[in-house]
Amino acid sequence: MSRLVVDQVRKSFGPGAPVLDGIGLDVADGTATAVVGSSGCGKTTLLRVIAGFEHPDSGSVTIGGETVTREGFSLPAHRRRIGYVAQDGALFPHLTVGQNIAYGLGGGFGASRKHRRHVAELLDMVSLDPSYADRRPHQLSGGQQQRVALARAMARKPALMLLDEPFSALDTGLRAATRQAVAETLRAAGMTSILVTHDQEEALSFADQVAVMCSGRFTQVGTPEQVYAEPADLFTAGFLGDTVLLDASIGPVTAETLLGRIPVQDNAPTGQGAIMLRPEQLLAHATAAGDAGSATVRALEFRGADVMLTLDLDGSPEPIQVRRVSVGAPAVGDRVDLEVLGAAVAFTSEQCAAAGRAPRNGAAPGVFTVPDVVSAV
Image (cartoon, rainbow, N blue to C red; front, side, top):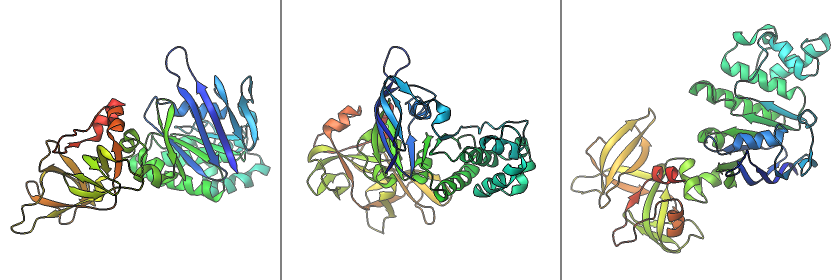
């Protein structure tokens, strides 16, 4: 059963291109969906339409089988049984944690005796000790404040939880820990949720379904594994992570490239085009004595457990990047051989041109990089 169905929703603010351009989204009951995209692509507007803070120009929104938005009708936001957690948590600074949560229980600003047990239960659900009920928001860390905001939103037992970039103001370590705690809390409660974010790693790790948005439309909707490993287009490929794109002559099973013959995924288009590999699909091995290798290490970026190697590939004017473990990594100037893991994603010349960069179809295939594609979209 679908907890949320968004059907052909359009929204404009004045003349010009619509902010939402016929958006459709289906979120199954009890699952988490992440809507990911760059700033200004329309993702927060979509969340506000679902919440009832904005009314679309056309289309409909259905929550739990009830149509809450359609042409000429919009159910008020407070009657939609939706929980909403904003970027900064939006806690009342002059109230205690218990009073903030009690407000979500419908008890106004006071944590009455009948609500104290519920407040303690909600704090436990978000992995906070009941003693936190007597603290003020300024006495909490950023991650704790976000968990209190989640507890307040969950107090109303919403049919749907909306999370509007709730972790973006936190530092990296705290962001990951808070994200995991929130995801586990929602999953344990069996609650349907939508997370809006511009962080690709956050979207892939949080959700059961990822919807990639560009200019008011979804370029692809699928599981995290699908959208990352089988992107529908070059924008999606580049937005979700680093890529290596090679000009190629594509056959039904393999593609001919500067790295030799590389397997392609099933149902790949054939002809001239390009293939995409993720940097972790390329293994760089130091060459043995007497072996010329196929690339030279131009630069090395140390990242702790792994390193990112920038390689000058023989026969190509443009470098490629390869990620590998940092132990025993080759040094700048070393020659390496490259091994390809798994199958590549193939794109036609037309798809490359639509993204703003057509591959060179001459006898010597080349390399082009994702930043060119992303900036052109």
